[in-house]
Image (spheres, rainbow, N blue to C red):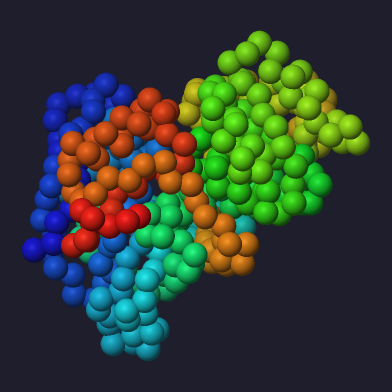
Length: 361
């Protein structure tokens, strides 16, 4: 029987509990006509997985494999031509269902069902195998290792929508500020914006992460823990463009208060998360400058395809912070500790499959 890792129920209130991991067995999948079975070779964490363990994510449940990011080989298919064409191919998985191509949001009345650890979707990528519809696959970009390919789907999709669809300012020569660089989404947004020809600036509470971001193409960065960091940032903007066109943010908190001082009139703050604070004051200064705040979460199937095509075309590689091998619960717990401590720079990955113990990911 195939194995997977899920959360185990223990007493505790949301936000106070931290569900332990447990290894479970799952049914051997039998694909229907248009489904495929993917033998997973690597999977990756997202912040939502930490929130699930803390019971801070909608629909948290037990007995469902964790994680939404994965890469693997299609080992069996249903009978349809659309399914059979994937046999033997290395694929990455669209991390959710219910959203085809609408720019506004998911078309499905129940919304977007992300894989991993909730009642909304029974599949997850921290498993030996996963069964899914053939329409939700993309061939893994050829330049990516298994670890890099596993690092791409959810963060790549989230960064793509936040930067391209929502900010509306991912244009050559425009100044883009990406906050909290070091996390997977922020780093993918950095890579996308640099490849698009933007002038990218970053913030972090860690000077080493700022320096690493510069090595990846950022034009500059500042430490948000310093008083007046927004003034320091303004001082390093190009002389011919002393404003920020858009901010891509995953923290919330005081981003409007600080950001409105940097943004051009009519500038955009594209927010894909609120890890610092679930509330965010919208001040009169932002109103007077016609600043817009736009929420952005995940993305459509079309945006996923567009994102993967861009990664292939531009020869981009997601940043991987650390890889552990196999369904080793203490090792996987260590990756969650990295995330809790915000010590990672890039994605946290689990190598899976028969060769995970020696795989050169």
